[in-house]
Image (cartoon, rainbow over all chains, first blue to last red; front, side, top):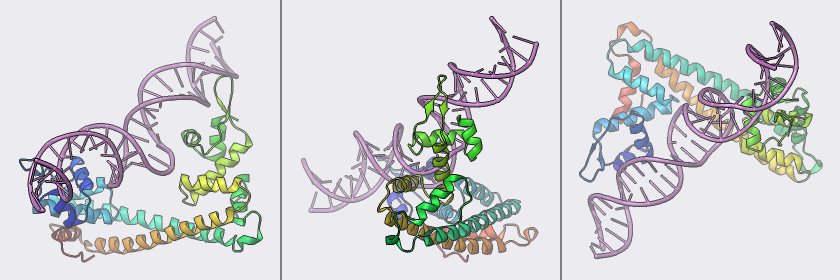
Length: 138
Length: 138
DNA sequence: GAAAAGCCTGAAGTGGCTTCAGGGTCAAGG
DNA sequence: CCTTGACCCTGAAGCCACTTCAGGCTTTTC
């Protein structure tokens, strides 16, 4: 199986596959006489593993850890649990931040409902106010 | 006012201030005889403006647009509104994604509540299942 | 035998900074 | 006068997870 087929069957770009190889996340594949990469079903699995982890917002460093954990039979459970707990905490924190940001953005947007009525829009006025070291209204 | 004082009074790192200057987001400051940067209150305002926009998740490119809009008196309202609407939509989309991610991560985490009882943890088993081109349980 | 599709490599670009190496400037103390 | 330490300077490289680019080789198809 050549790189193009691997790309099609996993939905991962060719360049990304080569990048994972350089980063040692994918084992070095065999080559044809013409120097084309030749992949086995094992590579398909590993690539899917990586993409699934990435879809869970794991960094490549964390994926590396998980691959290690997967390949080392014993004692990996605690590592994996810790990693997941940390990730869950991170995502929760980010969601909270974004909720606050949503409020702020909507309030700011509300400052300019009738764009035709002002020379300088309420939004820019508020943005400017914040440059005067006063606390933002929003 | 030297760069150190500007940094202290705005909470922005010195390197970041120099970076903003390179990126033309801050006007080029005067210099002392010893080639030290000398900032005016105008710089303080502009830097605060940038940081407030950044706290609203604007990219530097967007900040540049907002600075332009702020300095061009008329007709900026529509631009600013459009920018904010787009940003709001982006943040909403990201929050939705992260909510899904939260569910996934929590379900996956739930697969390994009693780490001592399994040789290979339920989490890794599930991660592995996903390499077999079966749909994830989680 | 020539075009088109597929593959190769190494280097550079992305954003928003941060870090590093290797210096120069300036005020206070000995 | 000299040194110490705080402060400042520049240009380049590093971070992450890719993406893009330039330039060239291989294989298939007509």
